[in-house]
Image (cartoon, rainbow over all chains, first blue to last red; front, side):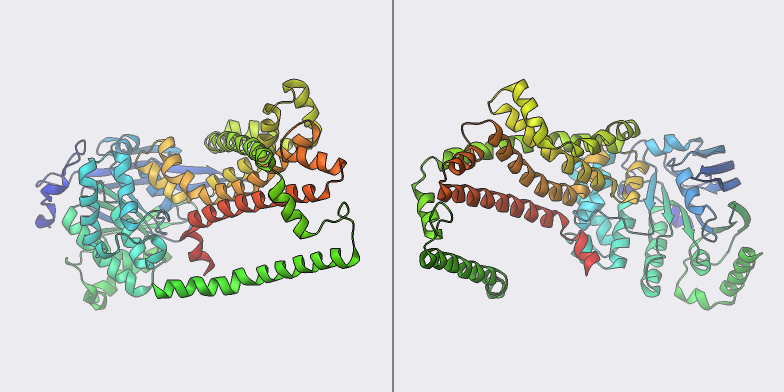
Length: 278
Length: 261
């Protein structure tokens, strides 16, 4: 845990971001206070989220687990200021979400890779750097470094249609990290992948988290994925989306594939399933 | 290398040769029927007469050049205005609701009916022809481009917004490039329409251009010249279609190949 908090000096280049303190108790990174979200759809009003209060610490890996329609994806969009809450407040490092968005604190990863088909892998990773105003001369090196970290350096000049599903999602993942945002928002990022690839990407993500010390908010409907990855699991119910219970699977880290077979893991799986079904 | 060469060879054999054979046969049949049935040249000139006329008409390039210029100028104007308007429509609810209905309505006005009006206003020169060309090609460009801009992956736009990208950055880096296949497809249609517009405008009031050439050769029963003008127009239409078709395929590369496989 302490090793993870040591920041890579090369990654603290972007100014304007408050860096994570190397010691002391974890500060709150994202605070949601009684957040509600209503949509006005064609025929009726939909209560997407109701009374969500949640505090996420700096460097914490939190999974949002719930059935379809529980508003977990909307929650990510609220945190990143893509949606505005109907009621309640959202603070990121003590400031409104909009301020954090302006400081480029959020890296978004979706279920689909959502890469630009006319750009190469390198070009896609470079896209956010062009937007956030990353120094020109460092862009290519930064992108190559990132692609290398997920084994895609060989494919840097390949277009998305030449990449496999797993490679595309890896590229999307490093695209969301390119400018070194402090918070990673992941919306069921691995759910469209096959079992084997998903496992590999989960491990990639854990390594990355370990190395770069991000706060991660990870939406999933896969119980074992949530347990395998997260420090804390927020179990949600649907219609309206509410927090049912928060689990803290204290499985040892680093977690490897073997952990899936342990008694502990199964116990947590059972607990999460019961929480979901209750 | 030899692999690529063989591929081109195969393509020539499979795709280029068959239509050429059919064309040669049709022309041969035409030539032969004109000779054998002794059809008068004002009714149907033989292909050889048409080719002959093609090389003898020294003013042909002048007329062609003028018509191409009118069509091209009108097309460029409506491409620039059309794509800009589409960008505006996509970014502004107000523009979409306020302007788009009129774009649709504009398509319902028969273009031929407004040629006399534009002639009254702007005279017999080149300006009203360019206007006709741009009016006629405006509609497909705006509708297709708007559709293309709207078809952009919602998630990429969300991603861009989440990193605080400005609307113009989103437009230039994401929406426009992703709409390129739609835009080129609309250019393909618009360019042929612009050509039609130029010719029709010249029919009504002109003393030069391919439309003028068609009208005068028809009234003088110079059918061979009429055919020459038609062939040149057809060639122009086909080349613009092929050019934009090629650009469309280039822009689509990768994107669609994935889905259609």
